[in-house]
View 1: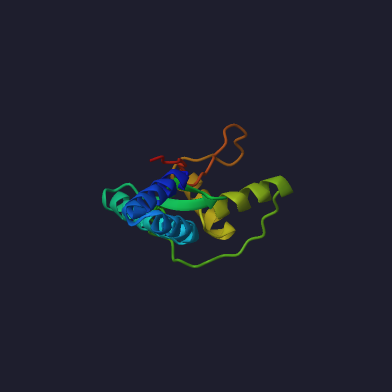
View 2: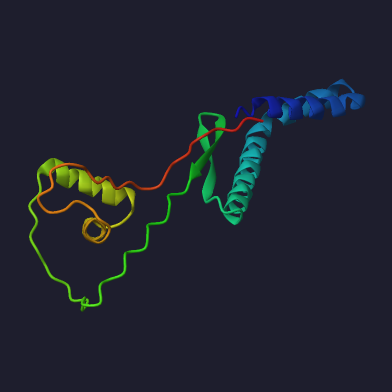
Length: 168
């Protein structure tokens, strides 16, 4: 969003309001308008940020968890809408025979698979261990791949992201 047209409109209105005072007052108004432009631009950014916060709150209340941010690119203010990631599904219930004890195993993975697991865990903001436990649990309890199966792939993804810009 280019703030320049709004700043120019404010400058014009300010200078034209000084016109009845004569040429010296008009010249003083022009000088003042130029010197306070940075302060006005900052105030406009604060207004945009407050509006973005209010819109984010209203979206959250309406059941659409998204955030609205104001990002500066040079002298341009961009409004960016980001859809919040979906909440991680609750872990499946444990079986009646599960005592809750934790066992440690060593798992050897090809480097590319390890990197993919790390990226998937990072995208969901959880540890690699938590991601692996959830993936294995889902495979075992929800009809996932059976041992020895060579077809099919399970793909675990995080939330969605929506990005956009608003114009006035």
